[in-house]
Image (cartoon, rainbow, N blue to C red; front, top):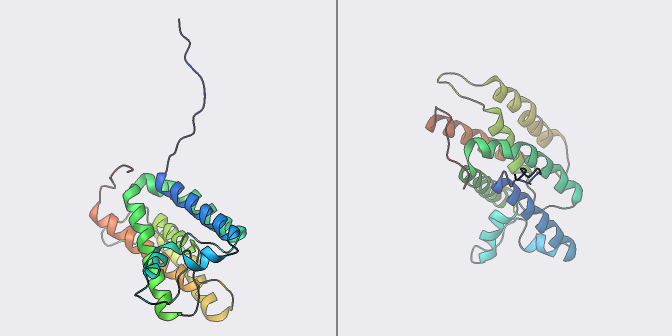
Length: 201
């Protein structure tokens, strides 16, 4: 009689979130190996000629870049905690759309309003995930209290810091990322009132 095998297997449970995290890690390693050159070339966004194909790549690529290990760990920790739950609920395809939309929105805003500032990092994506996670369910005529509290605490703090605190944190990217996540959440709730979404891709 064959005995059942006992063991633990590692599950690639959130392919988009894990893939995004690994790409961020790869981007950071490349930046370290090239003394930050790849961050300038690929993994940050700033105003440059629209005739240059790299301009469009940087519109997406900047969310993968990080200035150092502390910056990377701070963002990826949030993403790995929140992201898999959202990917399981909304599906991998929607996570790809959310991340790409957040990248483009924050990238375009930086080019328009802060043309001489290099923006890099996944913090916009982090705030998009936080706001999306706060919208657990939406009923017609109601706003979730969790959503309102997150808006006041997280985005309110970003507005305050953007006005009164001088630092190197791109508060506008956090605000736009959060707004993108919130809009995304309400659209998904409206399109799928039953809460049923497609499976992972």
